[in-house]
Amino acid sequence: MHGDGESASTGSDAGADGPVTRTTIASWPRRGLGTLLGCVTALIGALYFLVVGTALGPFLLWPPARAGALEILMAGARRLVTVERLRRSVFFGDLFPAHYEASDRKILRHLAVRTSTGLLCAVVIALLVLGAVLAGILAYGVVRGTIGWDELLTQIVLGGVLLFLDVQGLYALAALDARTARECFGPSERELLRRRVDELAASRAAVVEAVDAERRRIERDLHDGVQQRLVALAVLIGRARRGRHPEQAEALLLQAHEESQGVLTELREVAWRVYPSALDSLGLEEAIGGVAERSGIPLRCRFEVDAPLPRPVETAAYFVVSECVTNAAKHSSASAISVRVTLDGTRLTVRVEDDGTGGASETGSGLTGLRSRVAALDGALHIHSPLGGPTTITAELPCASSLPRTRPC
Image 1 (cartoon, helix red, strand yellow):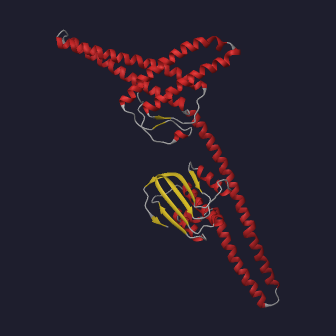
Image 2 (cartoon, rainbow, N blue to C red):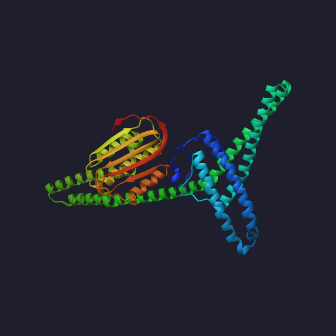
């Protein structure tokens, strides 16, 4: 069949069970040859169903032998479908999912539709050839002068109408052929929708789990950090109140004052890990700058965004940077960290790289929570952390279109 008018694409979904794409736009002679070959394969399919189906008909109707007869029928049907898949790939440039396996019902439905459309296409092509022969006879009659102008005009009008109908018929059959190929050799719209629903349900459950894990971590930080320091502060103040010597009381109050400053600093750190206020008031760039100021490792940042970002995207990008910097400081023995935030069209890319020892675990609670947070926005998190380093974590987040401009943090 000829192509169905779809635009070409170079997507990489063929390696998975994604939708059918088109790698290149095939030339018209190539597609025409594929159309003629499709008529031949349709004839072979019709003969296969006529001969093999008739021979296996009694066995298909007999329950004890039905399974074996159906297996024999499907073995040949799968070979025919393989030929059709190869024809669409070679002559029309279609790219199908490599690991997708169609059900027996899909295969039989595809062959039934493909056989009927292929034979009908052969009839339409035969009518075109017949029309071309009649046009030649008409031209020969005009040259010899045996056909008058009134008859010539009538034949031209009638031939033009028939040519238009034939071309439209070929176009409709081409569209039907491409559509049936997509439905058989790739997931249907129903399957894609079901898969999308499953992905959303999984991402929602992962987000809930990540939120619970974050709450447990906050509770642990408050209990093991802020609460313990407050207890120590209360003990110092109590000793100062009970002290009998002014010098000892003054020293204890000085320690209590220093401890209160430490409590405030740690409480501020916990609050920043929960949600940075600078993200709302100053934006993502300043919030990342705050991460750089609090980091114990030198952090170099490039911020290449010159447009407002959606608030969920800003929040996810901030936590990607914050979590990656925290992990690098705790576990990687890194001496330098680089952060780059770029907006390219409709995608925000956050790239964090450290020169540490590598070996970051993708199943750790921190990275698992980040992956869930990014997946909730239809984004992707890529982790590359070989033993010996370096570790590179890249988050891709879909957002509004904009033009980037380079600015240092």
